[in-house]
Length: 238
Image 1 (cartoon, rainbow, N blue to C red):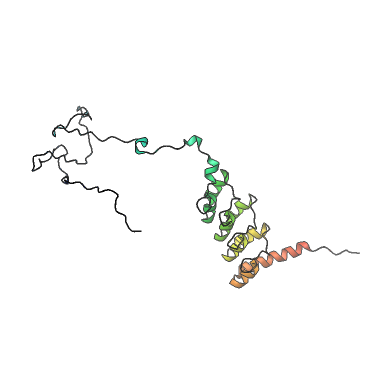
Image 2 (image 1 turned 90 degrees about the horizontal axis):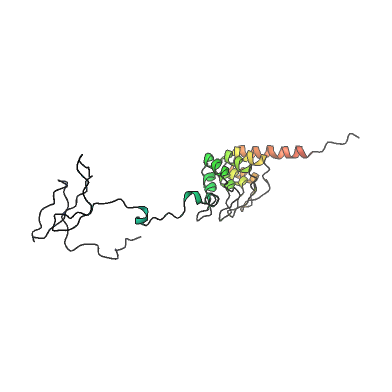
C-alpha cells in the first residue's frame, strides 16, 4: 500500500534550531532577528538535595513565556478508557471467544500441540464442541498434528469423534493422512468410524494404502481383525 500524504502540513514556517546535548539550563542563543528562541532539550531532571522543586507555573526568563514541566498523562487523558473492571469480565465468553475464522483459544492451542494450554482452558470451562466457520474442530486439528495426548483429553469430553468438516475430513482421516500411528490407534480404540470417506472417495484404509503408510495400514488391519473376533458367536455345542 502506497504511503498517503498527511491531511495537514505539519511543517512550521520558522524551523527551530536542533538542540545540542549541552547544559540543560542554558537558555540558548538569541535569534538573529532579536526575537527570543526557546530550545528544549530532553534530559532527566534530578533534584539537588535541599533544592525545592521548581514551580510548574513559574514564568520563564525568555520574554515572559510560560514553560510548564512535563507531567505524566493518565489513561483518561490519553483517551484510554477502561471498558470493564477485571472483576466484571465475562470469563466464559472470553475463553470461548472466536476470531475471524471462528477459531477459539482451545482450537488454536489444539492445532499447535500446546497440551498445557489445552488442559488449562478445559479446566476453566473452554467448550471443546465449538466448531470453526468451516466446521474445523479442536479434535480434527489435534489429529492433523498427531497430538495424541490432546486427542485423549478432548475425547474425555465426549466430543464428536467422527465430526466431518467442509474440507472433507474426519479426525481419523486427518490422522491417517499425517501418518500419525499413535493418534490413529487412539481414535480407533475410541470407536472412530472406518467407513467414512473423504471427498476424494478414500476410506482411512484406502488412504493409508494409497500413501504407502504401512504402519498405519497394519494398525487399521489389526483393529478390523479385533472387531471380527469380538463379533464371532461361539458355535452351539449341540
